[in-house]
Length: 354
Image (cartoon, rainbow, N blue to C red):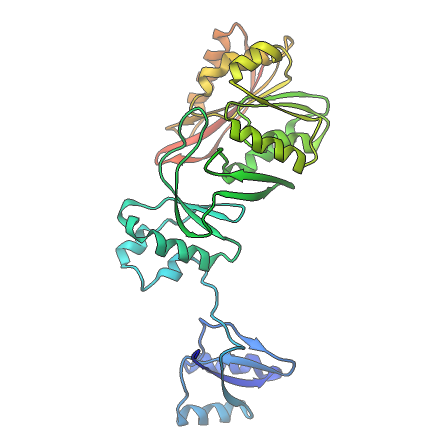
């Protein structure tokens, strides 16, 4: 049988006054949700009140009732996993808790430090208690790896799956975190690039993944986007997302190595090239230059950097473009996109070349 919760029942007209008095006496249970009916409000109490406390309440509040309930009052949802795990972990363990984590659709993805490796299930369940919309909690088990850009995960809590439906900037994406790369931390970057594309442009997305750049570009205007990826599972998801977002006929999914695809069918076709493969993009600058039209175009170049500035990436891009017998006319902008590791950032350079 569930425990009964003591509460003070008072008319709604006196509700705020009662809250103040109960708080002054240390009787209000702030960890419980407040409930009400058409006439009264039910203030949860931390314990049964004493006779002297009842006398004080009567003198200050007048008419009220004391009751016990198990249905009208519910525990408040904790505001953070730190709050949820307070008292369940030691102070040093609490200090090691991840302060932020990614949420993709209804999946939360955490980085669990080594010293908390045996607390994964406890932390995972804390995340579920804090976020009512999260149904799955996963822990990263290594870096994004290989040409297919996949990462291993450890299941911590909730439903045992890696697939979800993620909404971003008015688009919806079918995602499988174990099969294809996707980062919600690039939401602003996806929108920023898409907003620069003019109707009628031809865009080549060299490393498209499940399509967050390509589809958002297509949804904003009449651009043609060729979305390339070497990961077959990513391209399968990309095709689903094209249909989900009604981008058929504007986004053209292509399975294959970007170098071969551009050489065989997309040479001198693009007004704009997106190079979101920061670990390897410098090795594909020549491919981007080949894809850009003879009269020139724009490259969005991404690279990891140990500096918060994009100077290193700018130098890499300029060298690569010149080695491809083309020229950087203007650096349109450069910025830090996000931290990618301790003392490492993903940066982007937007450049006009001819």
